[in-house]
Length: 524
Ligand code: HEM
Image 1 (cartoon, rainbow, N blue to C red):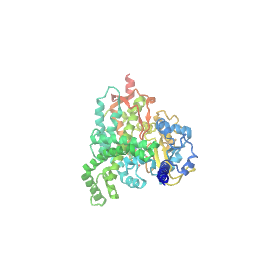
Image 2 (cartoon, rainbow, N blue to C red):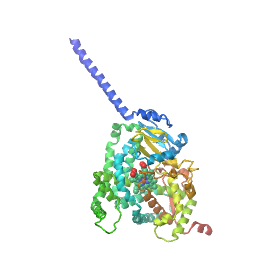
Image 3 (spheres, rainbow, N blue to C red):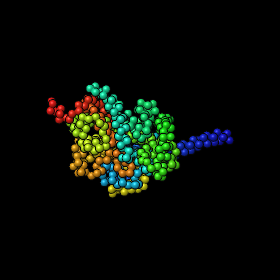
Image 4 (cartoon, protein in one colour):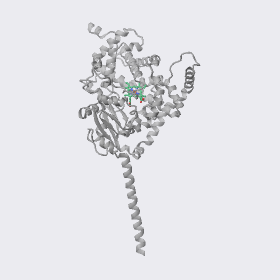
């Protein structure tokens, strides 16, 4: 009796121990399968596609994330695997595409408008704004916000862009004949000030505490999002939450302070604008009124049944979309023409033909009269493809080329793969504005140049960005010549949403003598 009494508790404890262990193993296994288990349909589809070597659990992230920069990566994959290749990021199958015929199908398909599931770490920061909104929300928001980027607003925008650029010209005056400085210390400030003024009607300098907090937190948030998307051990929610949750909440609090303040400051202004537009629409008001602002359009999303968070999200998206893109483009352009002085001379000669030595500001008509500036502008967007890849999620099976892409695949359209395809650009690593002479453009398919992406989910601000950046370039190049000790070989691009040069954009400036280059040649 005694023996059996001692033995029974032991056996019960042992049984309990074993069954708990079994349950734990089952739960862990289920969790791991849910986190990393690959859909057999995706696995079978992937077997037909070439790609870099991968371990079965973690995928090809190491090659992608820790390899070369994104432009080199895009061209390396193109050379090794052609226009279709696969990468596994944990359980996510990513298929890279750069054949123009395939891209046409992707961009024109109304079923391929959604962002992929693996993008969800960015949803924390961009929320239901255009970058990460689900397709249904995106459709409503995009329709509402598109008019804010219409050409009918550009006349008013031109005045403010020129005004803000004058302020930068005054800062550069103090740097004339000095040492090299990094353009990046100035250009994001300018593009942010312009977006704040034009889209949000706020005079928010970069140095403003809320703005600084916003930019620092957003940069950190994007970095965390990128790590959570690419590094498979962070696909485990409990690990990801353990490392980042508190931090992400703090970053979000910092980020939201700015749109909250803007809405607070501008609420009565927005309400009056909306009332005015309603009166005009109902023909109660006869006089002409300015087109609706971005802020009023975003605020009207509340009529669609959303709460204020969606307005914050769109403000956050527009600042994110409009700051580093323009600043990177300006920086790469000025660095490239500082390296290629003969190209800079030719741009100035063209500017001199249009403006002579007068001081008047540039406008829309002037932009149209500067074809060589346009060639260099496009070559900068090609050679330094700012957004090298765009992602789309396949929500239902779809045919691209002769393959059926199963639901659940992530499509990675390689804009850089197109821009570095030797078939369209014979010497793709050379910076050569002649790639964009009228004849050269005519000889290529239209989709061979797609820096702003194409189709319904392209850059909402494409025309605005071109106008803004050209006006700034015209003002800077009319006042200064740019010089550098950097060479094309020193430019090292890093992997990010908008590429940037890890070595900075170091230039020195000289005051422009307002005479064309042939005048200097004759007086030598
Ligand atoms: C040279 C400058 C720029 C380039 C090369 C560029 C490029 C792009 C590209 C490729 C996309 C598509 C991304 C995707 O499909 O995932 C995009 C989207 C977007 N861009 Fe730009 N962009 C530039 C400037 C701007 C500016 C100045 C703004 C704001 C004022 C802006 C706001 C946006 C927004 C909000 C989206 C999301 C559109 C949507 O999903 O409906 N971009 N941009």
